[in-house]
Image 1 (cartoon, helix red, strand yellow):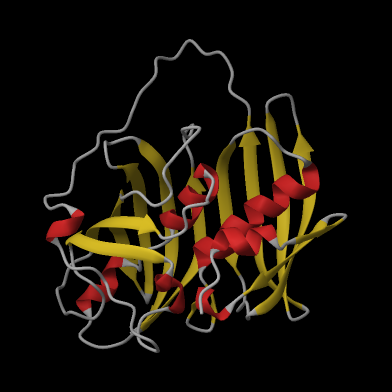
Image 2: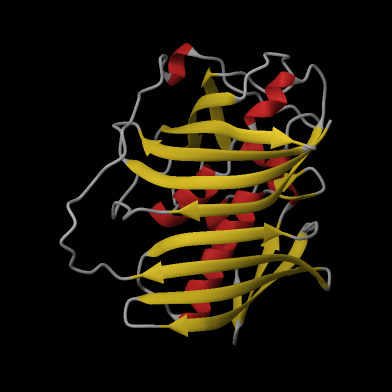
Length: 266
């Protein structure tokens, strides 16, 4: 049985500076919850506790410890609220243990003399119907992949021995009731690190830190449409990978820029 993210959000509880969510087993990624899921919940908690209604500009997440299924508490604190920029601190607690730290940066738009500039988009060489989908295989693929459809057009799926450190993936959510902000945060952390395709058998990998930047988002996005995510390994040594990612709409609008440190145990 799977519980949609929109259902989990609908059942959350707000008490002062704390929001409690019920994290279900189908959102697990190994021994902890999927990072994009945890970060999306943090954004909701920040907005709930501080009544924020200005755009999210950046998100920094440190994954400190495992988050188990069951009740997960998000405790927020306002760091500073200026004329344009608001910064919020959010702690994640699981089973009475500190499990993560998220800082959100929210900012209003303002006038500028700088011209607008957009990132250059390169479409993937094959469409989502031309490449194989990553199947959900219990006890093999992470549980959360039941909620996300991913299809590799560049690079390879994990453990294929392809020796590729880049990937270009068609990705979509299966929940039709997500806001653009929550959709983008979740999808931006959806795919595994590209370097897992270099291995010919299962190898553990774990995100250590994740930084996400968001340009102004459309007011509406179809949360079950296909999106494109490009991932590039910038550097790797001593069991750590430094990587970047860009999430796009199918017609080439940039939705997020991500930077991540991943520990690879192999």
